Amino acid sequence: MKPSQLERKLIAAAKANPPSDSVPYAFEQRIMANLGKVPVIDLWADWSRALWRAAAPCVAIALALGVWHAYADHMNSGATDLSQDLERTVLASVALDTETLQ
Image 1 (cartoon, one colour):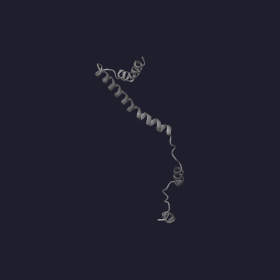
Image 2 (cartoon, rainbow, N blue to C red; image 1 turned 60 degrees about the vertical axis):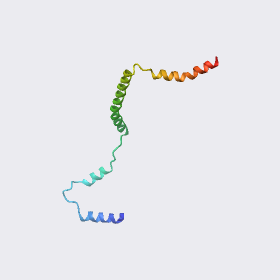
Image 3 (cartoon, rainbow, N blue to C red; image 1 turned 135 degrees about the horizontal axis):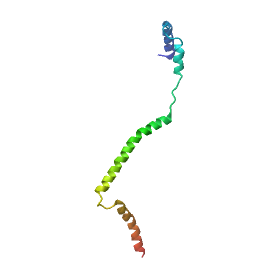
Image 4 (cartoon, helix red, strand yellow; image 1 turned 90 degrees about the vertical axis):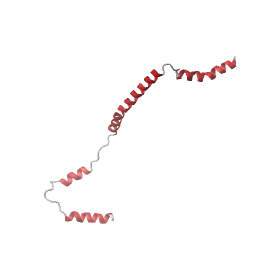
């Protein structure tokens, strides 16, 4: 249906049903005034709400990782330290170079 035909039909339907006396005074003006109001979007409130919702899971993950790390250190107390193994591996080439130079 074309917009002009729809408009004519709606206007005809509105003219056929006049407003009753039970409609409050200036009801149309109040409705029309509220239609023009656009709610203001508060981006700061949205961000703060999202960050507060994310805070609890972040704390829970940090605590879980801390407990896991402490438990892993306790279980591997007799094992070698990985950082020492890495340092020896990286510096092995430096030691070989100094031996070849002498």
